[in-house]
Image 1 (tube, rainbow, N blue to C red):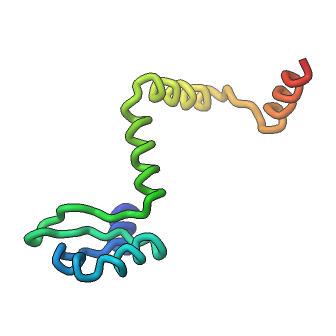
Image 2 (image 1 turned 180 degrees about the horizontal axis):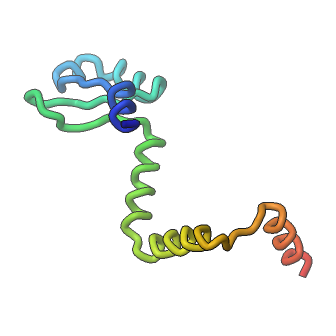
Length: 102
């Protein structure tokens, strides 16, 4: 439901011909207003313009999801939480301070 709302409210569709004519304004909308723009060619989606930081986050997410070792570490961390094997932030800070003193 969120994805549908997010896509509906945060994106607009622009034919490539219109994009050519209004490129500067469209880039301003993407960069400044954080809109997503779906560019169509012959009425079909051909490309999407998103703010650079969102693109970088998507790239990073794809990299994490494709790394089996990282995904195994994430799964192990989730299992530890499920088993109640957690520490408080204060305990972690104390542990880190004691390691620095060594």
